[in-house]
Length: 301
Ligand SMILES: [Zn+2]
Image (cartoon, rainbow, N blue to C red; front, side, top):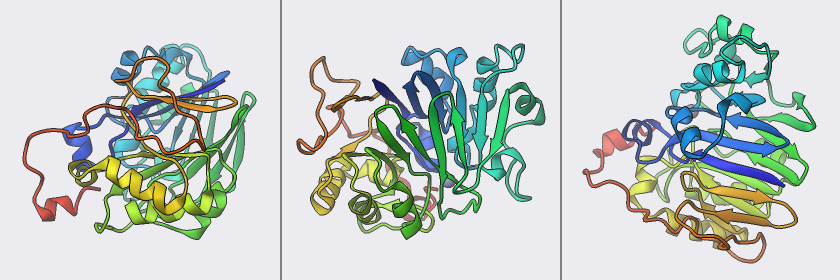
């Protein structure tokens, strides 16, 4: 069985600073344990999810924006037994490991030296962490070195799409995955550069045709509208069951894919291809403070 835990489903600056959704990334367990994009609050969310950061085998960071990397160093310290045991993998974009001149590096040389293997990934690169193969996939983002991850588990491939605009190469690189994790920063009719809005996500998901798509990296503007409605819109447009990610949601991949939101009891898992899942069951109306002004809203990433 392969298990994913969503340690955060928020993304962009304002969802991050307000923590209307957590920003702890995605944790994948399949014999080995991988932590993808450990943003602010990852360590705290791991404790809430009863995951032990000292058992992580690999940390993957897609790009050098704070909502994706800020907890990486402390989690590397956990993974390496407080830097006393050289172990584990760190795989990340060039911006995260070396910097690009304007951004990064995000992880110090000291922390990189504590890890058994550091890999700087470009699209097309492959690596193995135990029996799990990780393929770096392309992106078109404001950090030009951004990579996504196609993770080949024992129960099929998981496509982790990083922050990106809609691009044919991103669709191609994820075709055939069973589960697609999609960063939808913006709702319908609110496209911004370098990110996916609802319409873009539908085109991506329709092109990839996974068994199930999970909406992740939700920005403040989409949270203030109705994320469930956006997911329904995508499901209808793409024909793919599309779920709104919830903080601490668990996704199990075996013969079937079952999804359990943090507010659901046992036995409410849904199966892929059996129809859309509306995710979570939790109240999706987050926060009471007024939304940011339009100009702020345009800076949600
Ligand atoms: Zn970004």
